[in-house]
Image (cartoon, rainbow, N blue to C red; front, side, top):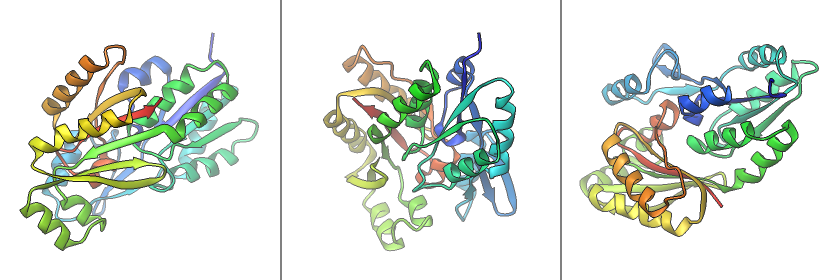
Length: 275
């Protein structure tokens, strides 16, 4: 028996393939632009290809939201098999994706689409999609997701200030000082803001500091460890947290192109929904 409603998200959700297949979640890709070349995130370019290209680039790539027409095309296709849809997207403070989804939805007559601004990025969006997919009705899914949006958190540890400096988030002088001192910024995405939690000398000290800060955020409903080309360290962190939280599944995910543009390679993150 078909589920009465569909679940849609975008490629910034870092949705695990297993969840995509299990729940039939539709993923609309954002685009990454290196100069005049345009790639659909995780369609025309893998995460590995992206980070290799990023490392060799002297300028940051640009990212762009899907067009309203691309969303409308997806919704029309889903309308043939479903009675409605919940569409959960990257925070509007970070991207125009949710607005494009709304405009696209307005052109599809007779097919209700509930567009949700997640206010976040990366796998917390995937957690919201899983909540939606496990809900019995579209109304239940929308209520359950909206209730959790304020609880989404991304705790990111950057290996370098180079990429946020290239993106204009910090000055060149700050980045140079940080590089000379080997400072590792610890950032928290919460409540529509990117907040600085700490700057720690050396990576070996920064990783325990990230885990220490996370412990102050507990209890949590869901948790994952994210990384950008740092799978061994991600596995060590996940193993430690699995021992501490035996009742919680702690998957490991790869940071995608859009967030990776600003974090750069070797970034690590803890993403979670507060309980």
